[in-house]
Image 1: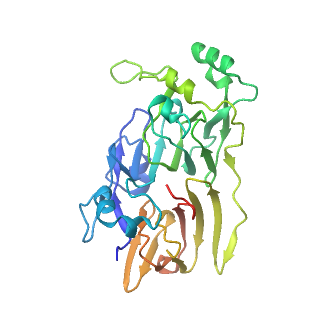
Image 2: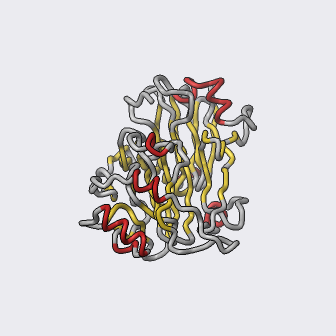
Image 3: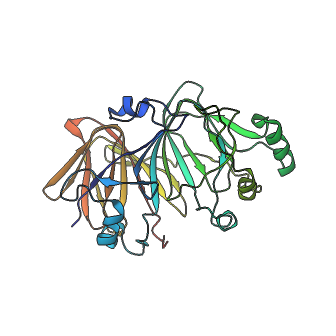
Length: 328
């Protein structure tokens, strides 16, 4: 039986990154850290088991040797289906778009639908998600050429605990000051449309991918990406809230004040992130205690387990998995 697993973060240094991942979560991250890939089977940042009898094994190696025990039934072990990140935007990110299943073959990219959970940020922090009302491809292209992108993008302030859904094809950017937990398809395809006129340390602008991006944008998508959570459900002293559910992933939040029972009878792996406090995972006679800011992978074969706050305190955790009928 596989036990719950912790992985070594993979840190990414991009010019818009900050210091909060290291400071807030007491990590030995680089001085400037834009992203921490918490759980990844992508070749651009492969997760490695941090400790225990499987220490040093990559997630890819685990899939090759323990595919169904790790993922569950009906999940393709060719690649772990999700990529989990922390994002610290000290400066704003580029205006960008990712392909979906329909457009990825047109550009040779990987489909990438994602969501953001707002962990923390500066007063007035915001994100760009989608197009402003009435924006047409022609108007968008004209503003892109002139650099007047604020006029064609939908910008909205966000607060801790909010959820933003970014399907493939939706133009978006993270504004400065946001600290996010991102759940996405396992993909590293990003097409930059605009980078606010900035340059790198050598004085050169970053590469743009306007041709691919214009083929990728879903001009018909006018749905609201800012999701209202379902009403909280009481589980004794605990609270469960469904934050998002779609064809790619499910996320719930739990406000824990006492032990909460979980199981993997649905034969699906689970991913937990400790958003606040310290949580203890207990299965059989074993236990794993993790502090704020850690991601834990629960193998599908684990069976029954409990998650509880430490020392009679409180813990807030996020739970991510696949939908029950996911067969990809």
